[in-house]
Image 1 (tube, helix red, strand yellow):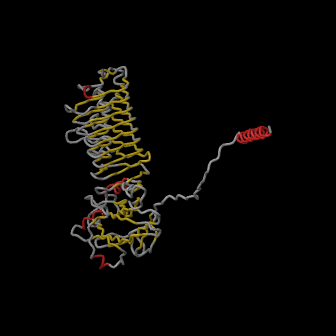
Image 2 (cartoon, one colour):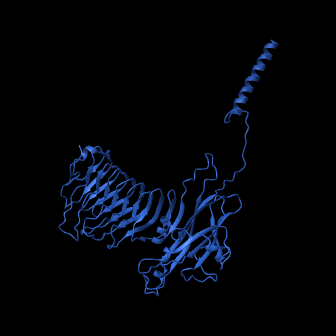
Image 3 (tube, helix red, strand yellow):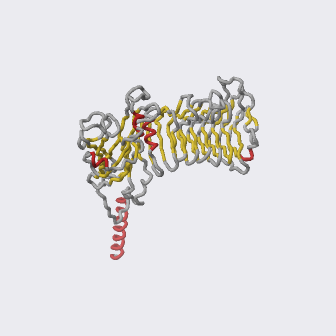
Length: 490
């Protein structure tokens, strides 16, 4: 009996203990063996790329170069009176004052200059020599140098490491008018006149551009910045020509334009050169009718243009009384990328060129407007065109004309065929076609995906989508066609 009481009492205590434990656990969580480690706060610092240029000459010592610095002057700081035999110099020091290794490009900036009657200028006769280290200014030492570059061609490249201390390179740049038998052509008192009626002059400066070098490593190596571009900011056509004209095969440069640029000659992008041009919503083009075949941009290398209006006006009549080519852009080879650009050309005689002429290379158009007075896009040879979110307008001829073995891929593009009166030839009718395919047999398929085709040709008159038998070489997917367009795909 006593044993039963003890057993009952023990069971009662156990049950009460269990109830108490459950009550204590209500609203709580179980706890296991745990441990934790909290790191200290890691400061992540971005590297900075910072380069400075200093100069020394007879009038200045280790002076930082800025926008108002006068370079290549006499020992007393006065402007040089150029004549055969004159020599001036500057000692330049390029300093890396940032925390990143960099590569740099030092070039001569030829600004304003004028010419004598025959078109000759000081930039043709002023020669440049360069030597490592500083130059004392001794004329005897200078005359022993090799002057094998004109001021317009001078360029020097280098690399600077960043080790926590400032690293630098020092060069002496010497300019010399080496006397020749032809120097009298520049003597205005010898029956010559300058292009503006004044004495001959030339403005000379130095451009220094830098970009990051393939030195620092991340987790995947040190070549992540091997394609970094030099950045050059330009404001005039001379600065633009200076930036592009000195590029050599393999060079890559980024150019920002801070003003509209008027041209009287073509800007050529040569083979092997990479140029990224950001126009910052400015214009580049020509308006004169006195030039023959002036196309603002002609590419054979690798050209990217952003945020630009590129325009071209009438070319003058040639000997056959036919207006010459006046495309806004021409692709001969290489690669062209246009982003958020407007391209226009005007040919009052209604001949001229298509607004964009592509005879070679690969062209990519993103968010662009092509407004061609004669025609929109001409695509030939083995060229490849990829266009998205673009509008292509044409007045007298086709928005798109294709020939050769070319191919195209259009996505979400609009093609407008419109008609206006030609002020120089009111009777010229043009044609009403939207797309003309004159390509070789077996040419690649051309694709139109979610595209729209419109026409305002002759007050709503029917307009054929095709002029030749093109539909077998084209694929139309989810496209929209205006009510007055004929020749639609099945």
